[in-house]
Image (cartoon, rainbow over all chains, first blue to last red):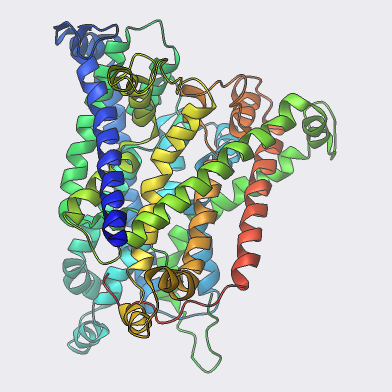
Length: 270
Length: 294
């Protein structure tokens, strides 16, 4: 009886949390389609005008272009830098390996706001702050380690024997990488790419600290327009939020084809 | 961390060096160097030439500034405790799987991937005084006055909870479902009640994971920034330490003082981590992990 009550309370809590999430998300969606909405369960009249308004007034074409550029470059660079490092860290043993692993772990556990301020100071000093390059450089700081840690277990699953056989049959290092490891790593690369993608699009702190006038990503633009609240109709801001949400949710659905939900957070192993 | 055994030969050659070089350079130039530069800069105040602790002295003599430490702790500690207890309860209950687990976990990770900005905008609408939450409660006659859950302390707590709970829950779920189920079964067979199994068998095994989860959630909550602005009173009760650092850097353009505040923020997080690490040493080491469901 007591176990049953306990199970029931668990389910009630889950249902409550899900209802709360759905409420939060659908409130934004409903508001973006409302002509006006003061109190009342649902708005009295609906319109799609706010999307056109948001597109024009928030310069969304440009913002989306910048976001896309940043995301593509970050994903590519994070994979390019992370791939060889993950290979070595998965295959070799050497002194200071644990130090390197700890070093790569830090940008993931230290809050971005903590290291973002010194990082922004440094990048502004070298004149790349407030530009697309600055945002890319900053966002890569947590994304390179993320790519490394996601790719490592995939390398560990590939048997070393395959590499040995390859080199015995006369393949060079480059050939082993290109013809053996790379094809076998495709699932790993997709997983890491998708995780870096989702995390880059929704990254706020670093993109906010480094982004200037022409280099705001979608989230940062969303924040500035909300913060300037009162100037813009709230429905148009919600319309922008819906555009962002559709983008993230699409990516999330794609991501979940490659990734288990628990892979989106740290593993608590030793 | 495990030291490499002495007789094991080091496999560090030219290939390893060149493969590691790009990422290592990146982390050193973009993470370690800015950190050191920040510490150095914080010791060189704008108005004084040479090294001085003036930035830190100013910070700790102005209640408007050093008060942010207390404000941030008073937001982060209660949130962390609530998140940890609820996540432990839920993850423990779900350790052997539940109905529609994949759907449930997918919905749970939604707040993580949607990001804090969208979450805050949604909370502003949904939990606002005109929002559905208050309308439903008022309509059911459960409350007479709407709950004021936005633009105050409660709003920031709410946003932090939504952000941190899924994160903490999924971490603990992975950890707890990795504990060998036969331990629990043996205890039950020997006559232990479920509550004794939890207290005497499972909790000691979960404790190390719980300690890390506590540290991670606390450190993340301590840096709360956008939700403290959007859902709180950034000039008053929820002026957290990251807001103070941001204002110094980007509103007063005093990078030196901003670095000093960032250093103080980092030290507070470090202090909390050290407490957890020292505490963790006294806990029993995790035995028999990685046998159960993954």
